[in-house]
Length: 176
Image 1: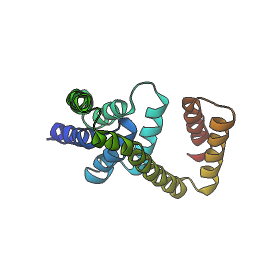
Image 2: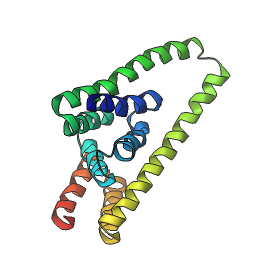
Image 3: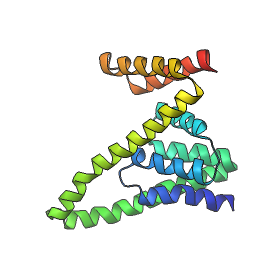
C-alpha cells in the first residue's frame, strides 16, 4: 500500500504541474506534508534546501529522497518513476500537439500565462517557508540569513548552491 501511496503522491503533482520542478514543489508539499503526513513543513523545507544544493532536477531528487525515507530503495524507485514517466509521456504528447498548432493565437496566449502562474506558486511557497522559518528559527536568524543571501546573490553574484550551503552551515552552528 505504501508504494501505491508514494506513486500517487508524486504522479499526481507531475501530471497536473505544468512548468517543471519549481512549479510542482508546492504540489508535492501538499501531498507529502498535508495529505500523507510523511514530513513536517520544516522537514520538507530542509529537504528542498538540500535538494537545491545538489545538481540535477529538483523534483527527481526530492522524489528519490522522500521515497527512500518512506520505503527504502523500492520507495525511491517508485517515487522517481512516478516523477519521470508522466512528465516524459506528457512532454512527448504536448510537444506534438503544440508543434501542430504553433501559430494558433490560443496556444500563444496559453504559453504567456505559464510564467505568471509559476511565479505566484513560487511566491506562495516562499511565503510559507518564511512563516515557518519565523516560527521555528526566529526573526533575527531569518533576517540574517535572508539579508546575507540577498547580498551574496545580488551583489557578489554567488552561485545559489554556495548560498544554500552557507545557510545550512549557519543553521547548524547557530540555530540547532
